[in-house]
Length: 281
Image (cartoon, rainbow, N blue to C red):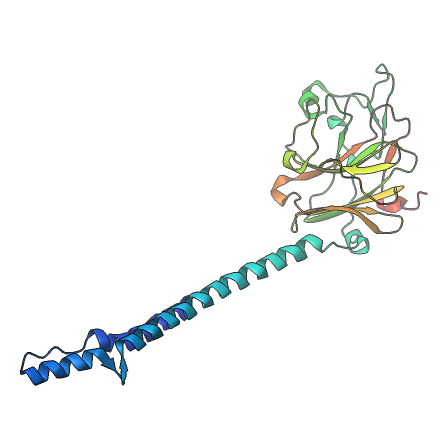
């Protein structure tokens, strides 16, 4: 836009400079009259005509600038919309599959973690210990809500699957490594959580306004994190259909970690599927 405006200003200057620099004679009355006539005309046009030309030219420039600004805004908006609605298919997401294991150091005290770090379940009796929490890890675990974090190799894109067929209450997603783990948590993107949940085996929701997702309840959930696009996407891993996609997801600097919960009083565990155990049904 800059070079165009410079050219317009140059042309305007060349057109109007002769009017402002017309000579003023100091000779006879005839010369003064001739000079006056020359200052009121240019190329056979009087000052009124030139004023109209100047106004018209100014309006054209103004409209041109408005059009360029409008075009740029519309182009940026269309790009943003494309970014919002473009969702990676599950098959492409699976090409970024990583192995995830549960981090017992972060688990709520009534969650029991399996020895292989793939299964988590709610323990009804507090007397039944889950994976022992070292006193040095007290600040790392969730103290009120029944969550546990997962560990994985960091990459720009990551995908994993969780088996939840028998479980009627669960929470799955990702969270910032620095997000709060104490007290009753509000699992929203603003607080560093990107999750979906199911309650009573029938309502699939996000924590943003409790939006009910009109999708078939999955038995196997695929979760895909794309740091570059800042998206967190959930799939029904049985038929590869989309469940939900957060478009305001974490950046690479946020160091997002998988989040799991079989929820309170749920008798059935949830299982992280290893790459080699995808035949679980």
